[in-house]
Length: 119
Picture (cartoon, rainbow, N blue to C red):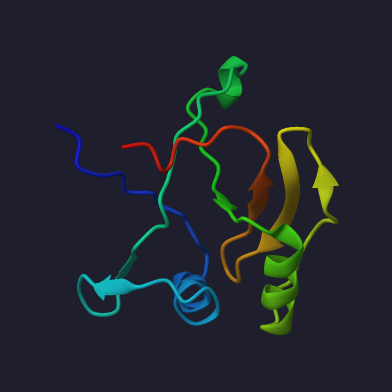
């Protein structure tokens, strides 16, 4: 029934954000029409967190990695700007990074059971 998930990241400078995902993160993509790039996401999972009414329905994007320290080093060498230090959130190691033209997203190394590789 469900064949995939389509994530939307709203950006005040969509071209800069698309260039970041294409050139810096190296995500594969298709051009849906005249430079409207649709990126292949890494394997994904969905978590539902409790929220107060004003935040109900809010979505956030966190990319996951196996080795946060090595991934941060690699991304820094490509000029990625990090907006926080690494923190131990209990459920994983977390850092925030800036997507040019589109605010910030999270990057973390999970310490919890993951669902993205379930059959």
